[in-house]
Length: 79
Image 1: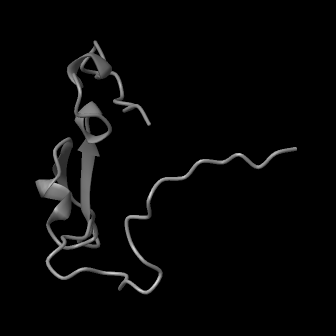
Image 2 (image 1 turned 120 degrees about the vertical axis):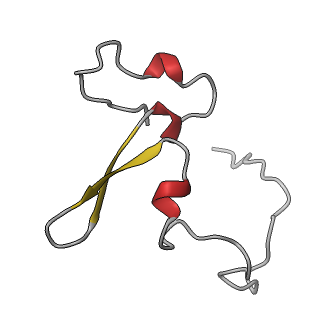
């Protein structure tokens, strides 16, 4: 069997740092409310935030048809 795997040019080096200053991480406080497709529904009794998502969370290309037709139906975003 031949190992004819084609790979592109690496985008980084093995010695590069794991985090770059100034790049926003997804687990920072407030990230949930800033992300398109997420919306807050309040807090739990212990004070943890709760929320829901729409198809926009998973896809930015024409997300409206991916949402449920009936508003009472649960939203199961693709991917």
